[in-house]
Image 1 (spheres, rainbow, N blue to C red):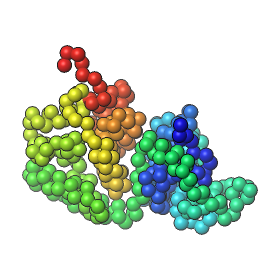
Image 2: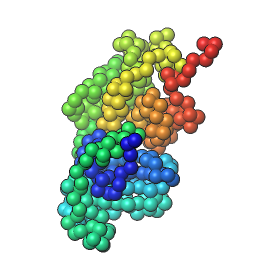
Image 3: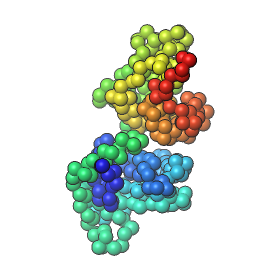
Image 4: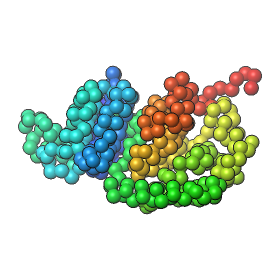
Length: 346
């Protein structure tokens, strides 16, 4: 039996690149646990959002509220940056008091990837002035981290603030074209979304793809495409045609036996796309992205993550219908159709 227990801060920090899918870069990572120390959430936040509160004044309060809503009682917080060993981290100074006021028991460390230290620890036997070395990842640590990663909501990578600003400007420019005929706008928007699936996507390309999801036709076209729909069905969705083929694909995830299960590789790639897009988006633009992430987690019968993503979407837009639907289904324990048996009289 493979243990999924991570022992101590050094092993936790050594495991973060595996747990998060990539080595963190200038980020604050929050690992939240509940009553039985079960892993409830893992979140990566750009340090700039905390070090410069004027850029994102709601980051710390929103994170604290979301952790409490998810049932988090304790949090391990790691600031991953290029700070000198032993230095204090301004991002932690901003975040930790907010988490503590929310009733979350916090343990915090700072690391540059090679060493780690507790900035408020005065015990040189525990935290020497120049920090402790981060242990290498032996096989057992790698195995534990990978086991945890399979049950961890994917975290957002750190995106420089200037990159996010460029994406936001491109999003706003594309939104100003919405006065054109809707079918044409949706068709062009679909092209931007497809372009964002490539490698080395620029900030303006991300911005236009994010803004394109404002229209539910474009969002739903992406959903049916992930479900394996043909280009004809995608075109019907983009043009608002409620064809029989569209209904068959859209109902497939809800009704047992009515559609094929998407490959895990397809869903995993789609979830990673949502992560990248969310990292480039302003908070007010993230509701469709979180809702799409909730759909993808729901398809994999990961109702905990799906509900968390739906909650994130509703925090950005309380009236976002798709997120409300997914939250209700998760709370009822209702998984996708292909997870359920056909009734006898089907």
